[in-house]
Amino acid sequence: MGRALGDGYLDKAALFSADGSSRWAYTTSWANEIDKIDLAQITKALTPAGKDAAFANGIHIGGERYVTTDISIDDPKEVYIKMRKGKEGAFVLKTDQTLIIAHHPENNVLSPTVPATSQEAFNSCYKFKEYIKSTGY
Image 1 (cartoon, rainbow, N blue to C red):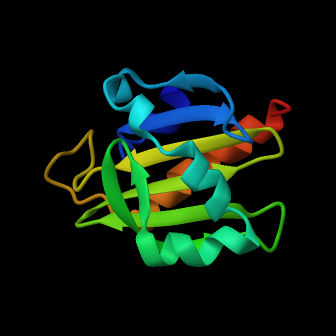
Image 2 (tube, helix red, strand yellow):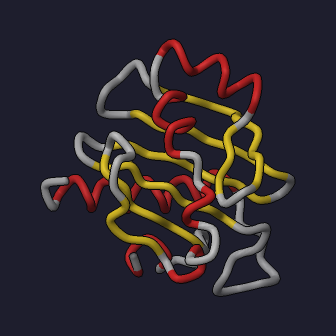
């Protein structure tokens, strides 16, 4: 998980099977909240039928409701959800076998006075997704 958090834009990350049925790994910073990630809601949001509900109701991650800002499901190689809660954000990226869920705080973890923009955090998460794909997952 260190590869996901290395640049300081993300502070929490977790890996699940693509269908959400099993948890593979997570950062210790999510230890108390990992069971509060609504995987059923997330996997449903990644379908045409569930997309509208995700925009209308948001998605719950770590016991917190996030506003859904973007969902991409049309290209099977680019499946993701982008969410916001104030100046924080969260992402779900999917590979053939893996769901990656990541959170970014208001400020960069390594440089706390530097804001962590959502796009920089998404790019960091995307690089991690590409790494996961390169390992066969």
